[in-house]
Image (tube, rainbow, N blue to C red):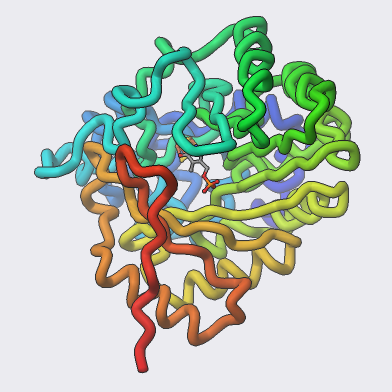
Length: 343
Ligand SMILES: *Cc1c(COP(=O)(O)O)cnc(C)c1O
Ligand code: SF4
């Protein structure tokens, strides 16, 4: 048995909660997981202090050994680029905290949909995350408050969809998720439950029988929007988790963020779409980076992003081309950006 298969077996024998406990939290552990020394990485302690490093081993295993520029590593390493102050980058780039915070934990920004911040915790800390500076502690509800907020939202006949976001809502226990899903099923209207999560990507073992039982996707519409950015994130275990959701009746979509040095290429995005599709998952959005402090080194210019999407549209069927979108503070929906089609 090679060292690698030994590792894989250790992780598949751990529950998802054990994998979360056992996640990599130190730069030296991350360096050794990719077969490098800390000195070979652009690690920054200041960046780590402001947003702590957190990487599940199941995700780190998919990084290329010996590659300091690995696109998965780049998404999670607390790096020196984050400490630069760059004009236009700030702590509340989509103005969520200032504009939409009448009930703590509830964001009602778009017609027909309400978004609930289900938890502030994540299973992985993505360095480009627009909520890296979000004041979660002021905005996370107890279970009781959460269910009361849902009941109140459902009284509004405009609401047809409840979106659980975070943080990562699949960090909630199955019992808490079951209580939320149950509340929606009790409504006299059909309410879609949508879950925005990175867990099936970073810890595929999160997709268990108990989770399916909690959500009961054969009895009500359930949409799971996963978040992956690069084809190497979709290994066999991820593909199995996504396919499982799909076969249980969940509509599975993916959203990505356009990131310099990770997926700023039509070839990479095409491969990502192929792997997602093979796992029953449709590309939905690719977002422009929200200009949160510390993320400037990930920025891709809009003109370049439009060209990349134009190239992708020429290479794949339309249903494998995600919509390029940007969050505009105060707008009534996300703004779609047209690809730059070349003649
Ligand atoms: C993105 C987003 C939604 C959902 O938008 P869709 O276009 O329906 O995917 C809802 N609420 C908030 C706050 C969002 O940022
Ligand atoms: S909210 Fe999503 S993108 Fe942000 S750190 Fe958590 S998992 Fe990553």
